[in-house]
Length: 299
Image (tube, rainbow, N blue to C red; front, side, top):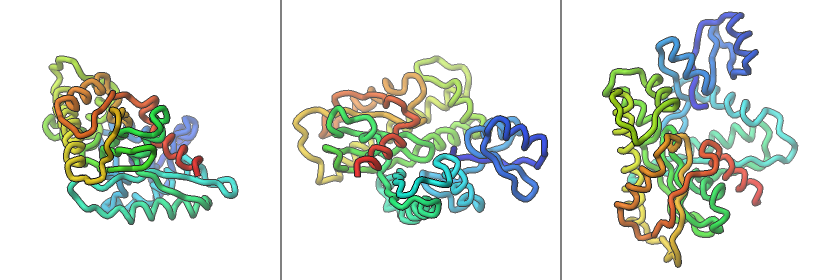
């Protein structure tokens, strides 16, 4: 959903988009196409999509970003909630090794939701949301990993209490832009190829597929090394009496073979916490939202 592209206005095009229920609006002689379909339209036109968010937070360099975020949120959750309705949204953790200020991002999303009409607005760390969604069977104890477009978020929780959280600034966008840079392809086209056909465990002659493998491995190694560094720097890691599971979620974990690739990297890196299993989330693209729902319903 974090994408849009503008095309010249045409009544016929607007009608066609409406028939297909594709989110869009008209502004200053342009049709602004929102969400997933914008990538396909941009590819047909040989253009790049624009991003209202980058590195997991609001994109300060995109002048049209904030109004589009408001529209995207309204298109997902509606603009007229029931009286007294609650909502919970996810926020990223600070990038490992950096003291990023996430206050503006969180406050802005909270304000948008309040203006829509929600009276009880809460936030949850994205990695913790993964734990809430998929680790009820271990009493919400384990490690949640969410590999999104801008960041990979990681959280360790003990009986639902966050113990440590961090993010790595290498997500899907990093993979796309890096692979595009070494192959000469458009970033948007690389993204579409990645989402539609990329998988591990193949011997590729295609240069884009080879580049995607290289930068996927780079992202995986960064997350695993981040886990090791975060544990080393934390004084609050409890002594677990038994191994804990790790759950993988987000669009970045969708390629076939990702779980095995991640598990292999994890097994080669010693951690103070023993991981019992590396499992895929039940529905990786919906995990964060499901965890936020669990958080909203639990209060």
